[in-house]
Image (cartoon, rainbow, N blue to C red; front, side, top):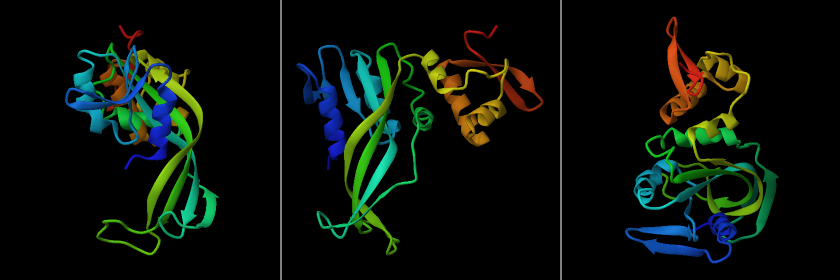
Length: 224
């Protein structure tokens, strides 16, 4: 079932003469404007990888990827029931999380006809007790009834490999390794390795050598 968040984002991008839920060949497009096709994807980008690969052969495409920056949790006693409690989730998303998605999207991005728009959103999540089709469950399980858009904090357009540098520290040494990335971004080394993989596959960096067993990289435009 479509969430309110998905519907609200479609309406947000469907300005002017834009059309919503338009059949196109084997696909259904969220928003069609005079200039581009717009797909809003809450789930993994891997789920629409083949679809986007086919669409960019003939069309200009924008993939809107919302990342939840903050979330209000609304607990109900039952589906469409009474309010039990309201609290703010401690989990916070950030623009850097897009690399968790791009790692599954490197066969498509970058492409001359593709833009990925990362949108940091604030949402209200309404949930009630339940375990759905889980084979194992506990009394603390819940099901999500709906997600509602409260606001948009920030957006970032990624149209080329070089745009990925907007997400990264600007004081990396030359050359650098994933340890430098991990330290400056304050993340674990394996996450920095994932980011380096995305950058390398996109053509934003080049491997220029090794220091022991550690791979060294330069920004692609600076590499010899």
